[in-house]
Each structure stands twice: as C-alpha cells, then as structure tokens.
Amino acid sequence: MSTIKSKRGRKAETYACAYLLRKGCRLFARNYRYAGGELDIVAKDKSGMWLFVEVKSVWKEFFGSPDTRVNKEKQRKIWQAALYFLHNNGGFEQRSRFDVAAMDFREGRKAVRYYENAFVASQVIPDLSIKRTRYAH
Image (cartoon, rainbow, N blue to C red; front, side, top):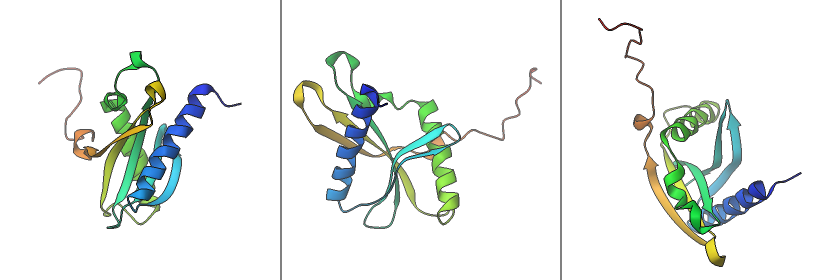
C-alpha cells in the first residue's frame, strides 16, 4: 500500500524525469538501490555523462526549501550507490556528476530548481589515510 509520502515522491520524480527528458537526457533507472543508498534517477546527458539525480520536494510552507535537505550523510549514501552502479555499468572511469532536482509543489505550484554538480564526490569520500585510534600519538 502506498503512503502519501511515497505517492508524492513518485510524482516529484516523474516531474524531474520530464525535466531531464526535455533537456535531451536519456533515463536509465529510477529508485536504484544498493546497500542502504538509493539513486532517485540515473540518466545520461547529451554528452554521455552519467547523472545521479537526487529529487527533493516540498508540499507545505513550513518545510522550508527542499534543496537544503541533501546533507553530507545523504550525499555519502548517494555516492556509494553511484559507485556500485558505475562498477556494474562500464566502470569507474566514466564521467559522472551529482545533481539535485528541488521540486516545489506548495500552493499548487509545479516548479523545479535544478542544480548541476550539487556536490562532488571528494566532499563525501571518507579519508582512508586517517588512522583512527582511540589515543592520539
């Protein structure tokens, strides 16, 4: 059974997909899941670059701006899922970027703000060179 939240999420993703199609992108996946992470939309732009698009929406005034809700933890999960996707679809060396589609449905609006390169992988990749110990040396 679908919840109101999931129905709204699907509607926002459908609008974001339509936006990408109008821009000449090719859609590959919706709601691609891997190990606790999810890619709302996976597409390729005209140049062949992979787009990993996070869709956020707002329906009521008191929820604020949807684009501010893609925090570092969410970015890390998106990055992990994108790595898995690339690994299984041609390898890591492919060009890609992380975008955010912010959908505003407040007061009957259907507005999209689209942010290319909303975040970059180097912002969320854990620094594996840091030695994590309980005691400082």
